[in-house]
Length: 380
Image (tube, rainbow, N blue to C red; front, side, top):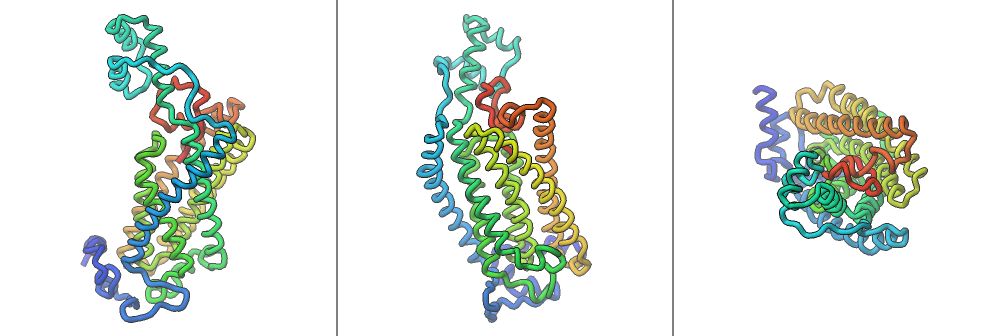
């Protein structure tokens, strides 16, 4: 049987616990699956479909927790710091025709010729149409307070997730040498340490929650890139949990959380108008992204974690992991290009973090003519 047929066999009846979490699948590759009829070692659990069910329930709980944190904590802190819910300025007058005209341009600034045509059709001065468009675009700018609440929640989550992940993984040999991820392969790695299982459950629940709430959060230009990122992350979590690669999966998660802590922290500093703190946070974010996601992740996790281990070459599930691991790496490169652009622009113009392209506006589907005071930083 060819490796491609083996690869396709990985996806056969993936939710059948007697197959995916049973001996049939693993026996077909000459591996012993000790789950059936055996108790896991003390402090370990064996992967089952119940883990996925717990992640779904956890996503509901985390969504509810997010609502409480944003409403009862973040919003009050934002009001105390003087962060506005609405932008100042005169709202535009109701004009269905101009609304349809602007909508046809995806709410971006139309060309001068299109504005002149619209002015003639509406028996208005060109200047009046331009003012109406500017006011309508300003009205569509996401509330600064809403963005503050989103960043506050994510900062709290990523900080807790990174610290917990570091505490869990610090004593493990595979954190320092990824070849230890495969000690005992294949018979001795199926069991998942309870501490790592809870780490998995927490992260999977969070990303499931993000996939649902992303459609209601502040819209960004990289909306679909983020959606793909969440899918790839969840697929990696699910596959690694159920196929004896939880050690590698834990490394992937902890290397991703550190840069998000600095990102959300610097955004909070922007909303609070602490530009010096924001600049330091952005520098730490850029450095952590480079080291964790573009150096440690591809070299230690992908290369030494998978490619470098000859024993894995005959295990077809490796190809599944590599697809998603490389997809994440591609997104990391895509976003780092944007990050470098922000940094270079700031350095060349000697500008603070809230006065350059490191802004939410560079990721929002909004017109370039939006009021500069509404531009705030956003990544990935």
